[in-house]
Length: 437
Image (cartoon, rainbow, N blue to C red; front, side):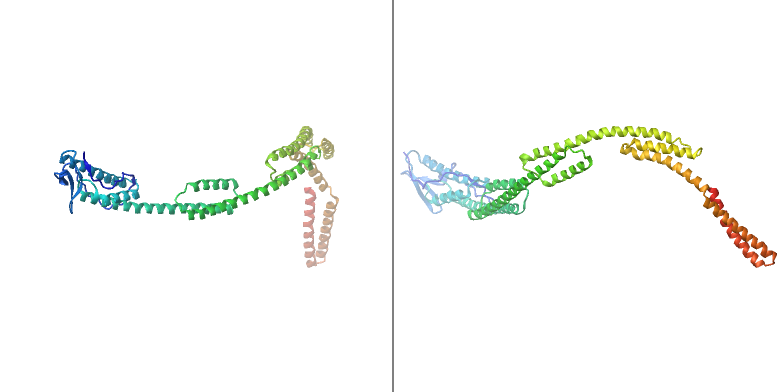
């Protein structure tokens, strides 16, 4: 049976993260299997040696078979160690392993290589181990940098969340949206990892304080709102009482105006508690509806009466528009007076017909009045007397001119002619005015 000297326990392979920024390729490790005798020997007593830079070193004893089989056995053990090293390197390069564990394993293998019971190219394996150790150290630096960046990002994110929470606590009055946002901030806060405990505690205190401040402010707001709504409910009940007392009124104009005022006061009262606001509104509206339904019925009946009045007035207008003022003014005036009396007795018409109907009657009235004014102007005694007076003055000045001319006083005759001409002009204007009437 073979007897072996073994090195201290070799750790099993373990995953490691990717080693970013590796400096150069690892030195190749020649396979041991093709020529184990290249790296060691077995003497006649079965002692197994491995060749090193400092000479050969005993690694064990082989008595279970031939020397070649013994060398092959220890060469395979070398391959196992080399495979472990290659696996550490592969995992570092792929990012699948832990740099810290890889560094520990590679260092442990390197430190035990001088006593390892293996036969192979120890120099090449040592060089590869140094390369893996360097690779792991670089990976550790990179991981540390990434962790620091991740920590800084996590701290910055929680600071931003705390800032936002403090702003909401200080300013926001969008209570539901702000409350939802604070809950979302809390959910996100729980997912942000990598902050050191001291910093995390400080930021959490800020966030927690902001959330409590917002909740207090929101609570105060809704307490005040409840108070206002209770007051609004009382005010609306007062308005309902008045609205219900007016629902039987027949004073249509004044009551409708008051209902308009009540509606404005209702809106100004604000919202009552949610469980009673709609019921209050239904009572208030029912009182209004009762009044306006009654008024509508009365107005419908009145509108029918007014429509009949309009038809009767149209019939009178047909008669009025046939009046001939040129034929007999006195008869026209008499007919118009009779039509006006009947017009007043008929009463009101629809509002939209007033201007049309009154306008047509006024046109007849204006025609009669115009004819009457014209006749009065033609028979006006004052205008005729004024024209006669002007005629008399003309005759006086003409007589004076003749007498002055007969006496040979041409100057006085000329002056009298001028005065006669002036009065004649006035006389002709007065006579023309009378004739035009």
